Length: 68
Image (tube, rainbow, N blue to C red; front, side, top):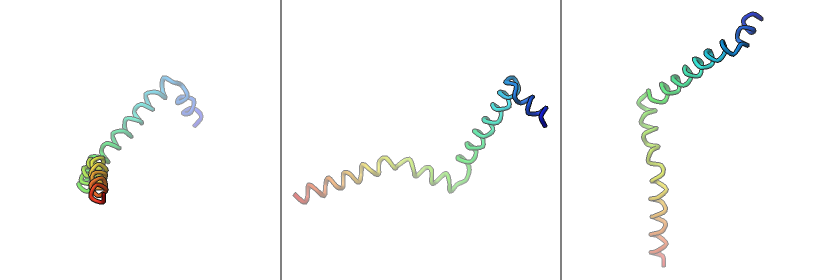
């Protein structure tokens, strides 16, 4: 076991291993995000969130104008 830790302690061995590990995690996140229909529909609905605030602000402004 100590031989393995000594081998991983050397930068020329640990850096490529870390690169492969992080790349696999990145690909796993991409696969998770872009697969599944229900997740895709939910993520697509999120793109309209910034516009929902604008519509609400316009309605409040219109209501304030009508009240005066």
